[in-house]
Image 1 (cartoon, rainbow, N blue to C red):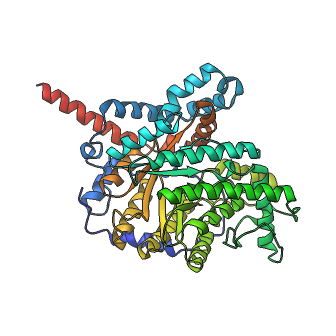
Image 2: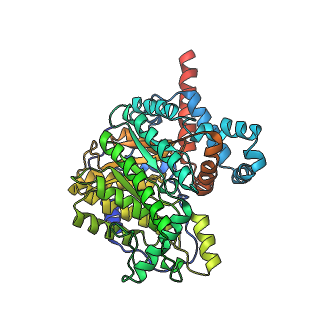
Image 3: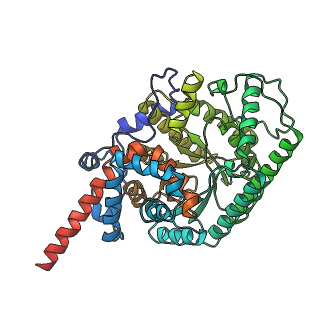
Length: 487
């Protein structure tokens, strides 16, 4: 599709204003994650006709070209079921039950439903086959080995081996077709990450505190961060804990070195607030080691639903410029809304999350604009992970306005497998690089991932009908075409 040559000045002006605006200080309620009001297909078509949209969704024949009708029917059926919030709640509760999740029947039910729709298989080889299918269709894949938090060193070693295996599989795929996603909570015992995060928060409040294990000064916190999560001075790490921290650092460096060898982007997931400072500390240790010379290898993550997101982003940009490394980041809205809200309420402190969903949207769009400006200068790389159609439109318009080439490795978009396929295809058809997150692993290991996805995307699944509208429109068109063809 030819990209519109002119973008409405109002759209670009609002995006530029979001890039410059500071985050609001006040909050009155917990913010949603992705559950924005999504424009209907008709509204999108009207905007396109007026020349105000970069992405086209009206021509579903072109949008879904190459997609089999059986696949569209299955996707529509799954999304329709998932739009029934009480049903999702019941299924999530069932998956939480050890009696259900641990039974052969429970695993079989999960495999035949949510697992099949949202996951790429049980092995890295099955996930690689999914990447090849996507690549033939003009998109890439992000290999996401589906494991959760590690409790001890042996578990961390097993997880590191799994991540290294994923990188080797990605290296055998067509160049540029695959990235790899990892979790620091799978490489370092969770209790140690919590303790290190406490110490980093305390040092932010008391800069004179010396942390002998700290190897770099890249900023992971700022004055607007939730420093109140560490109310009293925490104990120092023991010699054994420092040794375990160093082992975790070694695991990350081994993974980063393998990615750098094969030139494969490494995406580090964000986590919940109690461990995020340590996660960022590790992530930027990897960035300092492998992102020199303008190479965007190690990507951290900015969660736009957090009040301190913009302040921390600006501090990261200044530090990366000072260190002469490429600032590589994935921008998401956030994944731990319920957890962060419960924790803040239990402590009697303000939530670290924005006070409204609109504040979250504004922050996301502002962070995206901030980074796109730096992509244009060649000092940053960004993966915009979003299911929000408006954010996709705004970012695409801004990229076009800045003259960022469609093949520029510094800009990619991403969506989860099985979700926001209309947005993914629209971005692909407009010439942008798009990747789908492909979680894989044994069903019993993936169940926690499925529960988390159901929780964090609950509002999106129940309130957004955009993809279902597109699917219905295309299926009706195909049915009519088939009927006419028989006459």
